[in-house]
Amino acid sequence: MSIRRDVLAIAFVAISALLPLVLQTIGQRQVYWLFVVSELFIFAVVAISLDLLMGRSGQISLGHSGFFAVGAYTAAILNEHYRVDVVLSMLAGGLLSALASLIVGFPATRLRGHYLGIVTLGYGIAVDQIALKWDALTGGDQGIHLHRPTFFGVPIGSPVAMYYISLAVLVVVIILTWNLLRTRIGRSFAAIRDSEVAAAAMGVPIARTKVLAFVCSAFLAGLAGALYAFLAGFVAPEDFGIDQTLLFFAMVVIGGMGSIAGAIGGTILVDGLRVAASTVSGLSLAILGGVIVLVVLFAPSGLKGLLRARARSG
Amino acid sequence: MIQYVLQLALAGLAQGSLYALTALGLVVIYNASTVVNFAQGAMGMAATYVAYLLLTNAQVPFPIALLGAILTAFLIGVVVQTALLGRIADAPILTQVVLTLGLFMFIEGILGIFFGYNPRPMAIPLGIGPVLIGGLVLRPQDVIELALLIVLSVGLATLFRTTKIGLGMRAITENMYAARLMGIPIGRVLSLAWGIGVMLGGVAAVLAAPTTSVTPNMMDTIVVYAFVAAILGGFGSLLGAVVGGLVLGVIVNFIDAFLAPELAMSIVFGMLLVILYVKPDGLFGRRTVEKV
Image (cartoon, rainbow over all chains, first blue to last red; front, side, top):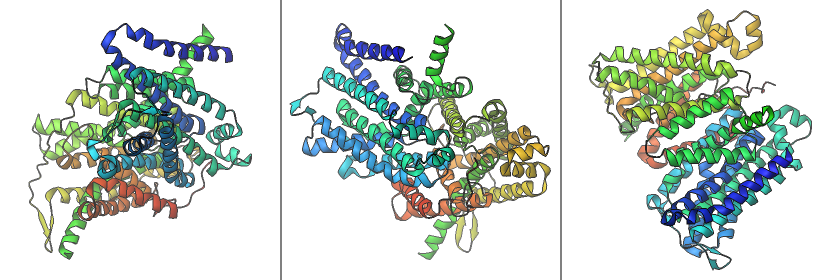
C-alpha cells in the first residue's frame, strides 16, 4: 500500500513537473492551459484543507470559499499597498483566514453538529457581502488588480513560474498535512470524528480539537487563496460565492473523504468538469449534484474507494 | 414615524411567514430523521415550476396551481426519503447531509438546464384587494401568506397531537428503537414526515414567487433565513420555528430599511453567532444530551 502510494505521488509530481514542456508544443494557447492547471493545483490545496475538516475531523463546512476569499483579499491588499512578496503574503493570508475561522469555530464547538453547516454557510455569504460592500478596502465589485508578484525581491509572474510555485505549494501542503495526520493531533481528529463520547473518554479535549481542525483547515484555504490572487492577478467578489464553496465540497465528497489522494483526484475530476461544462449554465451543477448523490448511495468512499476496490479485485 | 415602523413590522411578519413555513418543514423533517434538509429550498423551487407552468400554460385558477405544487412537493419528499435517504439510514449524519446537498445541486442544475436562469415573473391572481388595519396596509399576497401560515401550523399541531400518525412521528423523535418495538411503521412515518416537510417548503416557494420571480435559485435567500429561524426556535420546536421565522422577518425588514440591505444576511448571522454564544439551543430550545 505504502509503496503504491509513493509511486502514485512520484508519478503525479513528475508528470506535473514535465507538463509545461509538453504544453510548449501547442504555442500561444499554453498560457491558458498553464493557468488552468495552476488553478487546479491551488484548488487541490483547498480540497485538502476541506478534507482535513470534513474527512478527518468529521465537521462540515459550507463556507470554505469564505476562507479562500480572506486569503485572496489579504494578499491583494498587501500587494496593492506594500508590494509584499508571495511567500509572506501566503503566510499572512493563511494566518488571517485562521483568525477568521476562530469566529466561526468557537461557537461551533458548543453547537450541535448540524448547526455548523448553517453557521459556516452564513460565514461564506457574509465574507462575500462584506467584500462587495467595503469598497474602500476591497474595491467593491471592481475588485483589486495585483502588481506583478515578487519572490524574495525577484519579480516573478510568468505563467511558467506561477505554475511551478503552485505545484511546489501543493507538494509542501501534501507533505505537511500527511505529517500532521500522523501526530497526536491528527489522531485526535480521527477520534472525535469516529465518536466524540469515546474520544472524550480517552482524554481528547473535544472543543479544543474541533477548533484546531477548523483553524488548520482555514489556514490552508487562506494560503491557497493568497496564491490564487497572484495567479489570477485580480480579485473580485464573484470568485468567492456559494458556487465556489459547492465546487470545493464536491471535490472532497466525490474524491472520497479522508484521503489526500482522493481530494486531489476529486479536484481533477470536478475542476475538469467545471472547465469543460462551463458553457451551459446549470449543467456542471446538475452533473456534480447527481454524482454526489450516486457516490453517497453506492460508493461512500468516493473515487478513492472505487479505485481501491478495483485494485483489490484485479 | 410610528406608523412607518408598524407598517415595516407588519410587512416583516408577512415576509417572515415564508421563513416560518420553510423552517417548519425543516423542523418536521429534522424531528423525524435528524437530517437537516439542505435541499429544502431547491425542492420547493421545483414544485413552484409546476405551479408556474399550470398558471401560465394551462391557465388554471391559482388554488389548483397551488394544489399541483403541493402534491409535487409532497411526492418529492416521499420519493427522496424512500428511494434515497432510507437506503442510508444507518450512515453517519454527515453522509446524509451530504446527500441533501448533492440533491440541492442536482435539482437546481437540472431546472437551470431546462428553464435557464432568467427570472420568470409569476403573479398570484387572488381576486382580493389590499386589506387596511388601522391605517396599516396588508397586500393581498401578505394576507394569503399569513393565512396559510396560520392554517398550516394549526393543522400541523392537530396532526401531531391527535392523529395516530402524528403521534408516531413524535414517538420516532423521542426514541426510534422503542417506536419500532411499539409497532410504529418507521418507514411510512418517515416518508410522510419528509412529504409534509417538503410540502411546507413548496407552499413557501409558491408564495414567494411573485416577489422573487421564478428562477432556479429563487429560494436561496429564503432558505438560509429559514435555517436561521429554525435555529432561533431551537431546531426541534414547531412553535419555535414559527416564532423564529416571524421575528426574523421583522428584523430583516428593519435592517433593510434602517441599516444596510446589502449586508442583511451578514448582520443576521452576526446576531445568530451572538445568540448561540449565550443560548446554544436557540431561544426556545431545550437543553438536550446528544444521543450516543
